[in-house]
Figure 1 (cartoon, rainbow, N blue to C red):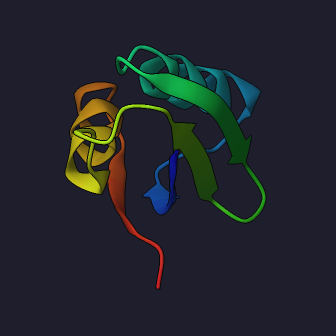
Figure 2: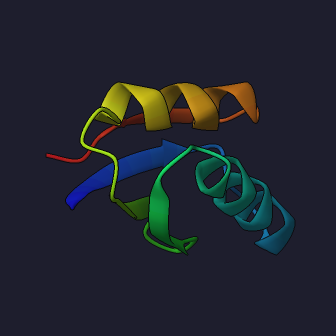
Length: 71
């Protein structure tokens, strides 16, 4: 299992949070998703070793938000 933490920019409300959660859950192999609106952070766990942070970043950006790996 792999886990990733992402900074997500552009979320302003619970609706935004829901859109980001849904986009992350659509990535194949995703096991768990947690999005913190206040801290603008998303944490994901995947059982698919082929899934990378870039995969999740692309999913968030497709939903209309900006994402980057959390440092």
